[in-house]
Every structure is written in structure tokens, then in C-alpha cells.
Amino acid sequence: MRLSIVEGCATQIFLNFTAGSLLTGYTLHLGGGPVELAAVASVPLVGQMASPLAAWAQALFPRRRLLVTWLAAAGRFIWLLPALFPLLSMPRESAAWYLVLVVAVSSVFQASAGAVWAAWMGELVPDRRRGRYFGLRNGILSTTGMGANLLGGVLLDALPEPLNYQAMIVLALVCAAAGIRLYSKHYEPPLARDSLGIRDVFATPMRDRNFRRFLWFAMYWQAAVLAGSPFVYPYLLDHMGMSFTQIALWSSLAAATTLVTSPLWGRLADRVGNKPVLVVSTVIAGSLLPLSWILATPGNLTMIWISAVLDAIAWGAINPAIFNLALASAPKRNRVSYIAIFSFATGLAGFAAGMAGGMLVRATGGLQFAVAGYEWTPYHTIFLVSGLVRCGGWIFLRGVRETHAWSMGDAMRAFRRWTGGSFFWR
Image (tube, rainbow, N blue to C red; front, side, top):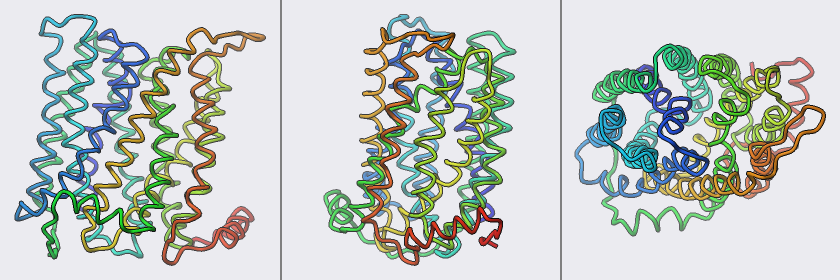
């Protein structure tokens, strides 16, 4: 479990260096517009749709760590190609789509590795400690990502384009190699193997009524988030006029706050269950977080800094709680097929919503107006739509059963005691 945290830190640096500001900036550098920005942020969700193949292939490999290693290596080292883009003669009108293609292929292998890894970690971490363990792990990885974002922001601002993007990709690949090497050191508990056909990989989870209910929630939530999230970095760069270093400071503030909030949410989830935690945190992510972006104005970054704290409060709970609820909703036997279908379904929903969001931003390009110095843009429109949809996510959680979870009434009474200063999670 400790080794997984170390491996996760190396992998987190790779992920941060090949996403976020770099991905947005590189797409814009290559001539991308709203649809290309939506595509490059959404195609990783398409990659998740290959996860059932990984669940089927697991039976063909003698050890899970071997499968994860090969899949992760293929997904990460393909990033050598974008580092070489500036050396190639590429048509300006299609260059951004080549980057989209690389992200898509990388995501297929990365998501497949992630599905097997998630089932593997489900065997390693005791059920009653998942909340606090993944809360702690998430907090440490967020802090590591904070350092990566700061370094990345300085590099992106200090070096000329496209050398800055090339340098970050090379550093990302060095960290990727370190993370892959650590997979070979992981303990792998014995697993009763069932040789599932590809049809059974899909059919077995879908016969589970409770898991189907969880899938509906997961798909709805992923769609609600991906409708607006691809445009956060373009909004900060384009509308707010922030530099890469300022964006790095923003994400670092969120990561530093996550180090505090995520373990607390994890302890709370261990006590009351993941469902109550998700109800509260998804409402925060659907109301206060988009509102902070909408209220921000260029030249005054106060609401942007506040949004970083709100981001940490909401996502410090949502990420580990959804992951833990997925594990709790999947039986130990054939768990990898359940995780694979979860990945497949959320990938499909997220990609469709992301592309729809891109088309909405382009379609509302003329919907801009200014009132008393405040300017409304298509970014504000998509944030408003995404936020309203996010706030309805809790409805889909009501039918999901979770062992040992508190009822919402009991959980809300506990939250009131917490806000009264009793700190009951101790």
C-alpha cells in the first residue's frame, strides 16, 4: 500500500505534465478551436471504452502486474510522437487533430491498465480502510501534482513555444518510466481466475441490479462534469488572461487544500458511507464551483483563488468516494469486469457530453454581452449548464445500496454536529 503511493506520485507527475495547461496550450499552438479543445479533453473517455478488453485479456496473462506494465508502457511512451510534432511538416488545419489522435490511443492503453489496476488495488486495501487510505493517497498525489504544476507552469512561461511543450513531455516520460518500473515491485495477492468471454465481461456486471443503478449515477455525473470541464483551462487562459504560472499556482492551491480535505473526507466516508459524502460534494461541485468561475472578472482573480479551494473541497471527496463506491458495488469475484464496465460506461457518457459541450460553445459564440463592465461569454453559458446538471446527480444515488452506509437523515445530523465543532470523525 505504501509502494502504491510512491508509484502513484511518479505517475501523477506524468499525468499532470501531459494534461491541463500543456494539453490546452499545445492544442491552441497547433491551431485548435473549441471543437478541438473539447475533443482533446474528451477522447480520454473514449479510451475507457477499451477497458472490457483488458478484463477479458487478464485471463491470458500469468500475472496482473505484467499486463498492467505492458499496457501502461504502451499508453505512456506514445507521447514521444507529440514531442516530435514541431520537427515534422504538418498541415496547420489538421495538426491539432493529430494531437487528439495521440491522446486517444494513449488513453485506450492507460484506461485498460487502470481497470486492471483498480481491481488489483481492491484486493490489496481492506474494505473498512479504503476511505482513509485512498483519501490519504489522493492527498499525497495532489501535493505531488502541485509541485509538478508549479514546475510545469514556470517551464511553459520561461521557454519559447514549442520547446516548452517538448521539454515537459520529455520530463513526463522520465517519470512514466519510473512509475512503470515500480509496478514490478507491487505485491499481487492470489486471485481465483474465471476465464470470461468478451460477452460475459459485459453481461456479468449488467445482471447485477445494484451495480446497474450505480452505473446510471456514474454515467450521469461524468456527462455533467465533461460538458463543462474541458473549457476551464481555455477560460483561464483566454478570458481571464492568466499566465501558465498563475494557472499552476491556482491548481497548486487546489492540490495543497486537497491534502487537508481528502483525508478528512476519507475518514468521514469510512464512518458514514460514500453515498452521503457524494451527495454533499456533488452539490458543491455543481453550485459553488461553477458560480465562482461565472462571477470572476478579468483583472480580479479573487474568485479564481476561491474556486481553487472549492475545487479541493468538492473533488477531494468525489474522486475517492466514486472509486470506493465502485469497488463496494462490485463483488470480489470477477471484480475486474465490473470495473471495466464502469470505465466503459463513464467513458462513453463523458465523451458524448464533452463533444456536445464543444458544439454548444461554438454555437453560442454570438451570445456575448457586457453589463456594467461584466462580460458574459460562451464559457459562462457552458459553466451554467454544466452546474445545473451536476446539482441533480444526487437523485441517481438514492437507489444505490451500500453496506454500512448511513441514511441521509443520520448523515445530515452528523454534518450539523461537525459544523458545530464536535469533529466526530475522530
